[in-house]
Amino acid sequence: MAIFLILAPYGVYTFLMLVTSAAISLFAASAICLATIAIDVMRGRSVKILAVGSAIVFAAIGLTLALVDPALGTLGVKLSVDIGIFVISLGSMLVRRPFTLQYAVEAVPAETAAMPGFLTANYIITGAWTAATLLMAAANLVLLYFPGLPLW
Image (cartoon, rainbow, N blue to C red):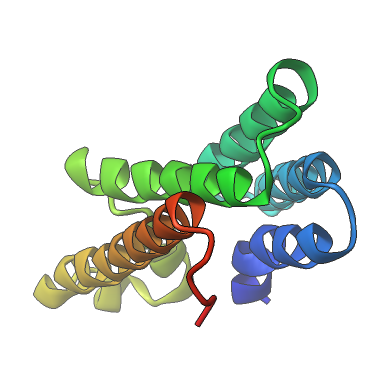
């Protein structure tokens, strides 16, 4: 269930980008992030860096799209989301709190969380997210400036 809650905003955002406007996609994703925060609070769990950061990123880009630059375009929106998630992921590691650690600590016994390699594993997983979002941002940047390239 936890993995569904973690990925739900991104899945909804991606699906809605195919069938409706970018603004609706972004605001729906932000609302789902806020719902996941509420679920965590109701269950007595910590408020997650990824959920809060994603809610802010989706809402900020949606507001920018709605109020400032409605002609941003799909690739511009995707690039902005990728950069936002990259900043959240990298930022969490720079402040020595890899965002995956919050989820992992709640999912394993205390003995496992106390193991020496546990923190290292979370840095590796968060680093993989960071690298993946950087690669997605780079791909969207290339497509933005070279629109004739094939999508593959």
